[in-house]
Image (cartoon, rainbow, N blue to C red; front, side, top):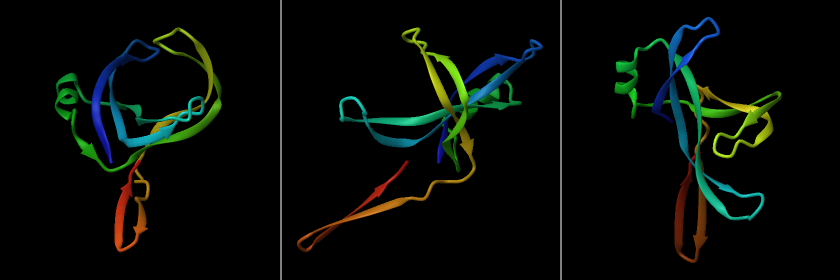
Length: 120
């Protein structure tokens, strides 16, 4: 499932203004490569739309099927807005209409069976 969480206006190279919806996938637990500690995050990306500003506002909070997936790209430089640091990336995030499979984990302890659903 994805959720529309925001929108922003952009301009084409020709100067034409259009809106992009910011979509967000489900919550994920990720382990830091540096500290080894876990943190929660959600994949996000923008998707262009033909909707006007009012329609975009109304769509915030809408849930739809699909997911946000990592797509490999040629290396490119990205400037981190908060720090100004320039880093090299080899991927981008984009919408996929395919839902990731739900993972069900079962833990058995004596006579108690706990079922946990691990989402994206």
